[in-house]
Image 1 (cartoon, rainbow, N blue to C red):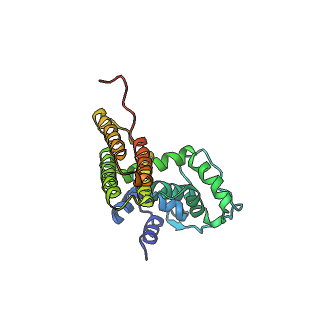
Image 2 (image 1 turned 180 degrees about the vertical axis):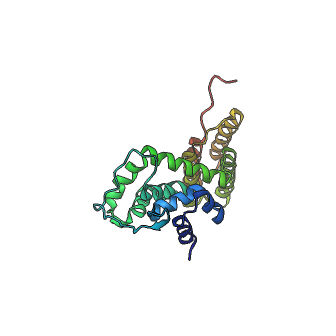
Image 3 (image 1 turned 135 degrees about the vertical axis):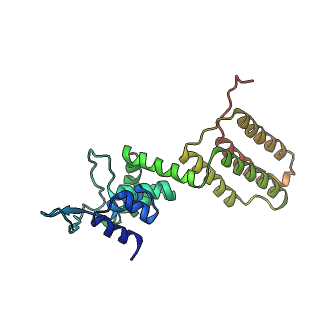
Length: 241
C-alpha cells in the first residue's frame, strides 16, 4: 500500500492533518492536496464515529474545467495544475491536459484554457507559492543565476575559439536561466553586480569583433546569445555614479 493510500485510511479514521503530515514526513499542504486530489471524505454517524463515504465523481462536460467558487481552496484539478506548472515547469497547455485528463481535452482546448487557468487569482498564488518552495529547496537566488550566466559566457567564449558554438545547447541553457529568473521573480539588488554584468557583455562583444572573418556565423550566434543573456540583467540607473 502506497503512502497516499495509508494516509487516506488515517484521515478517514479521524487523524488530523498535522498528525498525518508528521507520520509520513510531508507538509500539511501536501496532505491537504492529497485529500482534494483523491477526494477523501468522512462523515459522522449517529454515535459520532467516522465512516467512509462513497466517492461519486460526476463527469464534467468534455474540455471544461470546474467553475470557480468563493472559497479559498483549489479543486483537485487546479491543485495538480499548479503543482505541474510551479513545481515541474511543465508548459501550461500540457499541465492542463494532465490535470483535466479525465475529460480528455483537445490540444486546442488546452492551449486556450491552460493560460486562462494560470491567470486565476487563486491558481496564480498557488503557482507562486510552489515556485518559491522549489527556489528554497534548490537554493536558487540571484547570485546563483549570475554565477550560471558567468559560467555560460566564459564557456561559450572558449568554445567559439575552438569548436564553434553549439547553438542548440547554448539556447537551451539561456532559456533555462530566463525561465528561472522569470518564474521566481528574481530582482537584482546589487548595483555593483549590474555594472559588472553589463561590463562583461561589452567586453565579450568587443572581443567578438576581433575574431577572424571566416567565423562570422559563429560570432553572430554568440552575439545573439549574449544579447539574450543581457536581458536577464536589469539596466543600471544612468544617473548613478
